[in-house]
Length: 79
Image 1 (tube, rainbow, N blue to C red):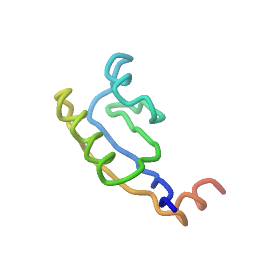
Image 2 (image 1 turned 60 degrees about the vertical axis):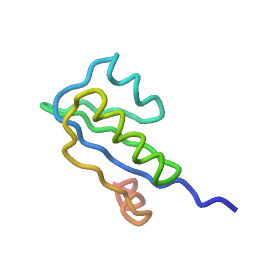
Image 3 (image 1 turned 30 degrees about the vertical axis):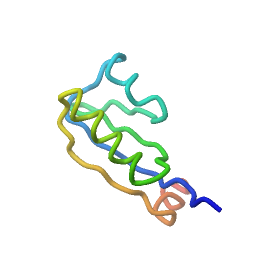
Image 4 (image 1 turned 180 degrees about the horizontal axis):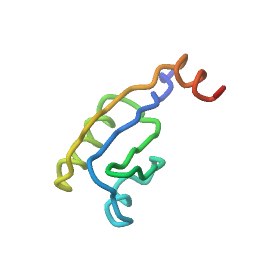
């Protein structure tokens, strides 16, 4: 039985345009004032490193990579 994918948020410096965002098709995007926040489920450590490689390959600045624990996700959903 495969482990469920973990939820991650990734903060990137700057507001990404449509072309850059297309590199992260499985992630939801929220544009902030001076950064972009991507949120989505990543299957395993290889998928996490793949996203980091995409960020690096595009010359973007990674500000934060955070795994959201199940309890945190539930608390945020309850608002």
